Length: 465
Figure 1 (cartoon, rainbow, N blue to C red):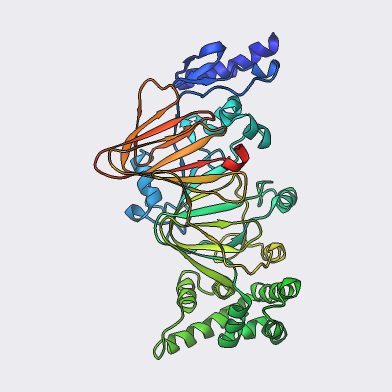
Figure 2: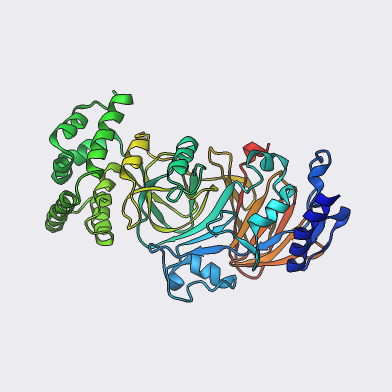
């Protein structure tokens, strides 16, 4: 057929570029992995495929945002350098390592073949349910973050708002998808997340006169008079009004307020110990002088994670990562509404209008052991989950075949990975990244004297079950 002949040309070109041989049933093979024939969609729907052999080595993309760590202090730089990606060879900060298909920085299989393009030609690698639910794309984006100074005070829109913002301002909001996310601490990690409880906000208004003055007497009085047990819409309304007054204050008023606050705290620290929130505010002021985000920190929960603990951030919740290094996983989106602690574009009105104004201290996820050496972090969203593997020397572990794709990152140590019917084990060392197709069993073995630490991102098991 003409259509079949035409569609075979791009496949043949891709095959030549990757040095592929022919697979069974007329498909194309990559490292023993069967790729679907170009005209497979012409026939009746195929049953779920058997375990697909092989894994695909990936190269992630480094993002050099200004808040990132530099040199050997950056986990992102070290992982990229170990994988042969150059790391911080040009001296720029190495802030994020992206692993996935997002078009802003898609992972690569070869210099001119992205994972996104490969999956488009091989949707069976996603599994039938995943391909149907998320339009033939990988539903999650996997990252490593190395944070030297605070990220912006921000929130991520829900699906409905994401679609509306994308339609109205596609140059600013490039994705129509929501962006729930989860951070798993690799080192000590700190963040601002969600609004503080009413009693804490009352204490701020009573003990921080600069905030009370900027917010205004009327808005301050409403919050000071509200009763904790009242809760509900009334408190949210007062909180929204006070927070919006703060965030929309003039640059001159904000600058003067921060100057007075800084002067008072530096004087008082000579005669009393500053609170942790006051210490944080002075630290943020050094990073972002005159920025309203410095003052916004008083309204938010100050969260600290130990290594191995995780924080989930849902839609329309204010947050800002402050310091440390983490694994992060999210729905495939880069939609961010910012309003402080950033030199980037600020959309203050949108942020203040979209927030839930819930006053709940975020749940710290400890993870659940799913087998020896493996801990799983499962958020409420369908798009993703994260597993942490901590394999002692001489040990091995098996991930059973699941009906969705996975990405593995080797954080430390070395060993071997065996997947599907690969004839030989592949070496796995620090910085290596592997894409594992759906229905593929994976075995990991350590070698050498060190623990092998890996992280896996995959589609939420609840969706696949």
